[in-house]
Image 1: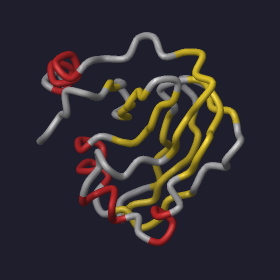
Image 2: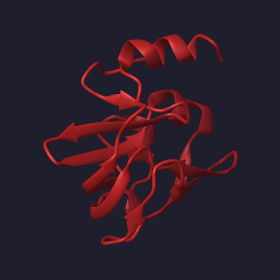
Image 3: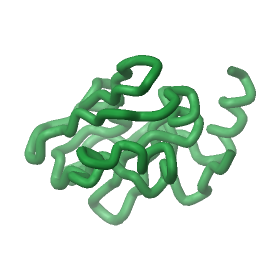
Image 4: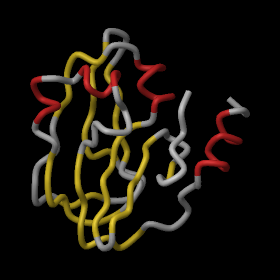
Length: 124
């Protein structure tokens, strides 16, 4: 399983890619594997606020429906519309299949780097 070193992670298995004053958010390979084949993504709304630790969307797999939690607080600047028609992209390339791009970030503290996330996974 890959854990890219340029991303930050949460205990609920989301990743964040910070780029200046914006950030991309997705779910980790671990989460995608645990969920199984994704069949539906409930897209978030552009312009909506996201709050760190709260669900901003959910995904449906062959196993269950699961919330996707926001690892940061801010405003949704863009939604990855491709996921509506191709949720399997998340299973195929979880670190490229971002859900939302967030700007006006106000709370990005407490995220794990790749080494800390890898250590966390070993405790599960």
